[in-house]
Image (tube, rainbow, N blue to C red; front, side, top):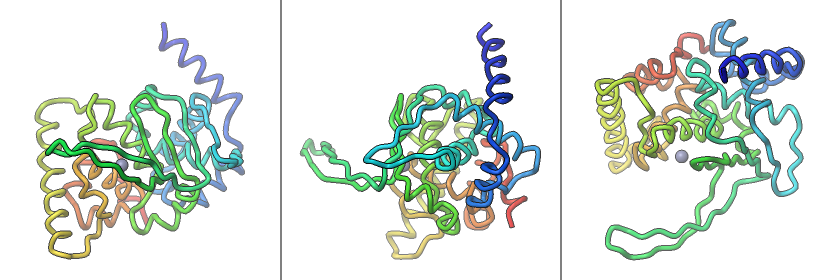
Length: 257
Ligand SMILES: [Zn+2]
């Protein structure tokens, strides 16, 4: 019943609120990594972005003025990870807050010795269970340039959403069976460990060192690279690339230039 109603509503959105051609083409031109896929997938991405825009609520903060091109840029990048998995993975939240710049967040935490700490952290994005997703617009806007470094704030935060779908923020999204889950943890842990060792030895790493902050950051950072610098990830972390290709149902390195 619900599925029928939803499909009907989706059909209505796709027919009446389709993304205009010029806006879509401008988005592909502005974020070239979106094109690393077969034409049929690109058409599916456009439909998914249309539905995403209809289902989510955007809020511009701090005096920022959000236009159609900005909302579409976020929607198209957010839909890349779920192109084959389905938009349903994002059903747990509706709000997306777009900030005019990075946000300084005050943090308080207790360490393993029971001692309290306070400090601040500069955020270009944040994902919380139940939403909203926070994004710094300048970081979103420079996605084409930062793709060479494997950096993408939108993909990072939305991959946190996929991770959180398991109920834990542990770098392991819901997977079909125990063997797949064990294999995921083994591959990700090995590459995370090797990254930490390289950083400790003062060696430059291809992957963003932020991935060393635990498996819960390794997964989103590796996923950023998978989508925006796929050939680099395949070359430097082949096992991680193949694991993510299997999970996301995509092989972007094959289509990247
Ligand atoms: Zn993160």
